[in-house]
Length: 282
Image (cartoon, rainbow, N blue to C red; front, side):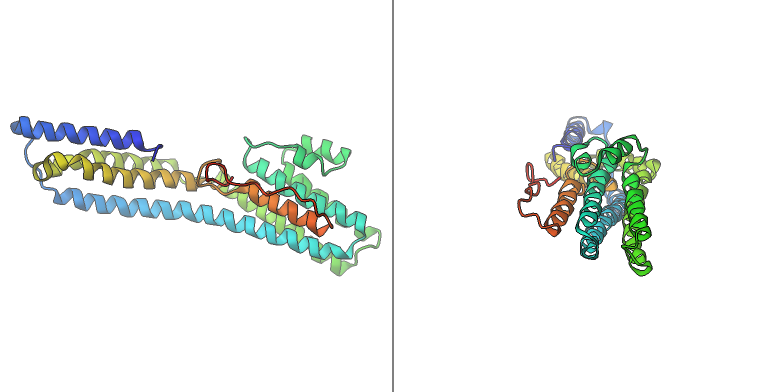
């Protein structure tokens, strides 16, 4: 409501001015039939619903990808029971680092390098900082570790293929998230709906001023609240990785993976999961 309140108030003010004009100087404002406005409103609501469904699909796809990452990381923690303890810790540390690095990659404004650097060796941390695609560097590092273990005879061909499939799944999650983030809904389509909805809400009082009188601003503002609210909701759902109220809680999901991996390694003093701030989970 705070985000669309100015637009709703503008519609209410215009509605009041239209009613005043109709009552004081009716010869300047002829009577219009409200039927066409109702039909136009139905058409716009259909287009808004289609656009919001498209944006929600993007949000839900992002959530499914992060759900898959949680599953793949837990699968990795189970599979690495086959490895020597030091190698297992190294691999799971890379998984944790990848989860946090992916959050920072998708949210450049939420950079917390300590969560990644603290899990890497000095050489790995330096290479990670210099990489153009930090999460992909960690994927490559997991692959290099698997090749190293295979060459040392610690992994058979079958086990190497099993681990490689899990790492490839993580790389697929990263690619899918990058696809969602870098391919927005076409801007002209969004702009057209926004302007049409705004013009429609401004035209509503002309069709109902003669029947509703001074009550016209209230239904006009209610319709504006619905239309502008749906439009704003679509804006937030379009980018599920942004820092808006309706975005995915990436920091929470990454910390969940972090805690899962630490517990798999035998840790007990786990950091608490991030809680909601002002009722919003980030």
